[in-house]
Image (cartoon, rainbow, N blue to C red; front, side):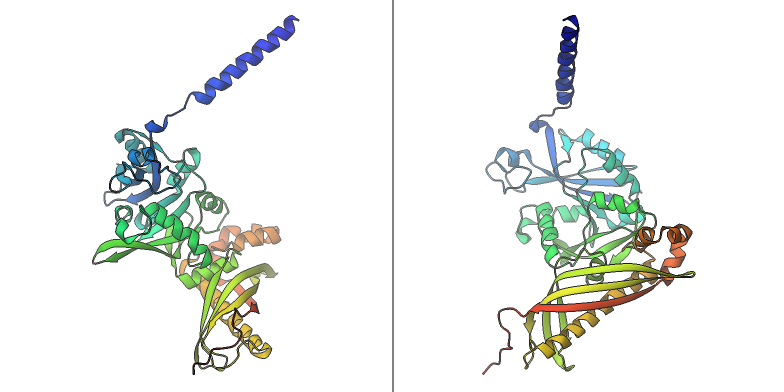
Length: 399
């Protein structure tokens, strides 16, 4: 009987401790500064500048919560404020900003990390390491490299030139919409860290360009991608090269492809929508030579045309499929050449594919991959299947 009482007392004590432990760091909403946009710059003085976009308390009080909404009521003017703090590194800048604000920074609603180009080129490993160790930061937050202006200019784009009331939501919408165009490739903090942990594989993420008019920031455009060597930015890929890379990575969801010539070589406009692209990559080892066979299967449909003949006839449709396949193959080969010769960056992860398929070969070459990768031969084959031709199967002939 006494033993049961002891067990009961222990259970009560443990329950009490759990309750206390679960509440020790409880923070009231009126003590928090909700961050919805975090930017990092490297100043001329070598210091790290942390710039944040924080929702004004009046917006929260009027019903426009941190998860969305437009706000109103007592939220006068901009629904956010921009603050900055500096430090010798990101951790110090973060601590300094917390010391200067009347509320504690709350990062769990922040979904985008904006990196100034200069900062990205200097190396971002320490900052990412701090973020992954701190539970306040979401590992699903997107990473973007900002070009064409400063983080302050980005956060202060006038609402009169945007659809959303604050830049953060504007960029989130653009990221969501680019899935239909594949004009960029945006990875999150978790994916970036995982890529860094794979030996010799290079990270890639989106490039956000600030659009200016008469010297003032009026908008943004998400186009192309930022290429890294380990944790340092080394350059950018254009839109067409980014699309080719997403095909190789099996990450392309939807994209538009335009031809400027018809089946007879005449000047014409033919537009197709790529709805699916499946890529298989296999390494081939012959002695000391390593190559990769790349097979791409594409599905598309005809979206628009300016030809005087019925391009949907079976014979002509087959000719069109050959032309589309050739264009996609050329785009892939161009992107691979840039990654090999210009950047020496294995963004696709061929070294990882070699590791999975031929681990013994990988073990011999992985340490010297930087010297081997630029000369590797890629054998690319593309097969396109055009499934349908839209609502109208025949070209329109004006009278």
